[in-house]
Image (tube, rainbow over all chains, first blue to last red; front, side, top):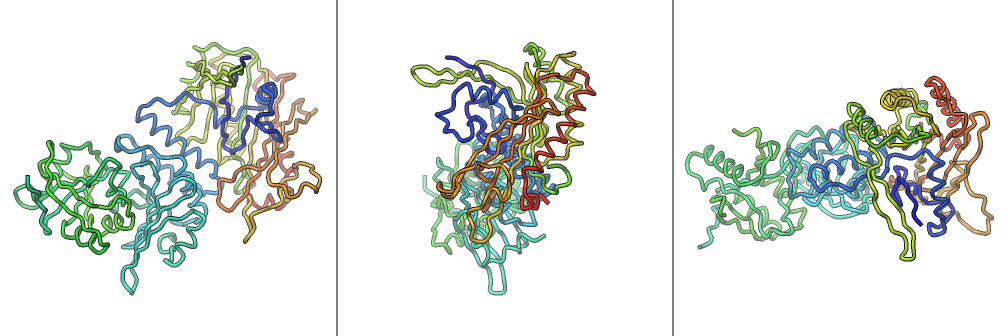
Length: 199
Length: 145
Length: 242
């Protein structure tokens, strides 16, 4: 039996809704006919239309990573101020410019960027961070106020590595750790993060 | 060949690509990120270039070191040349009970190559300390003659 | 669902024109190129063939079927295939007036390249995601407090953890089918739960042929999908979009 679809077998739409699955069914119980009919009856969601497998060129990899990051941002764009989103896109364009790219570095990891977005939308800093990347493709957010520095490296599955140093009347204080995004607020609280997050 | 420890009062330059530079939200460069000092899987020491290996007044030594980096590495206009004092690097590591060695280790391409050995691979706190307090002078490649 | 909400929950809006007879592959290529100035980034689309046999299901890529073109911000998209033109907007949704202006522009360009083609279907689809913050200490919520579409399940089954509802309804006024999908989805936000509300309105009969008639139909669809969207929501839900 051979059937043609102009969709991938299990796309992940912008909404996260598994379009190939008939609601209420387990995927194994879906008849091919139902899947086919379902596609034909809907206007095709385009954000996850199937695409050609990426060419292995660095330029293509960077392009794909950049587009993926922007599409990920679109998933939560209604929760981001326009100015924030536009600044973020400028930073991403700059960060992944091929003319400055170190070819031995991995392109931006989508899971790392998702953790970044989730953390930012959870902490809601008024001041945007400067952005960087690790050699392994993890995004890095850095806030700097005079000599006070806060740096976060975003891993998979909401993992965040962080380090900070701040100066007060008692001298320089440093701290570092690894935690989950939803713990960052409590973790940073003793260090008065408004120092970095307020405009 | 005997190992030459680089004197405390001397300096090294570490090249950091654009993604490893610490910036503000408007992409103004403020220094380097800890990852600029993190050893990759295949590395056992951190590569730098010894400024005082070159002859001449300090500014010439610095520019010669930059030129050596440009000749021997793939550098971009927005990559950063970050300078650190060797003694300061050692002392900062010592405060964390890490005893690094900074040695002259010429390569086929770079006679002034210096390696920072025994740097922990994954001590984010220490790498941030070095990025903040040792590599205190970072200039974009494009802003240097 | 429109600009009267400060934070409309639309994650994707799509207008689709489906052709009665496909155009040839060379023309698809030329059409794709003609959209370059509006959508500078292009990705090739490939067809997948599913083969189900004794050895199980296998997939095989069979060839180029079209192009997905995006703007620099990757939130304005056009998909050009031999059998269809899809114009989509990802969040942030700029409002219908802005969106339909782009649809009209792209439609005109596409039609100028293809000459006139009879349409097999015109569809409008809006995917909405309603992000519901957890209250202090709460990790559960009652979906019907936010969306009035859900399964009818006897209480004997206990707490509802996840669901999906799919319904196809008829709009005689529009001579169109309305496909409604709603259910729980993974939230992209921490300490939130999310619900999907996906409304697709598509017409396959008495197809309008003139441009004015096509866009008049789209306007009518817009009013209907707004009416249906609002009918699916509760006041608690609307508060989340302000």
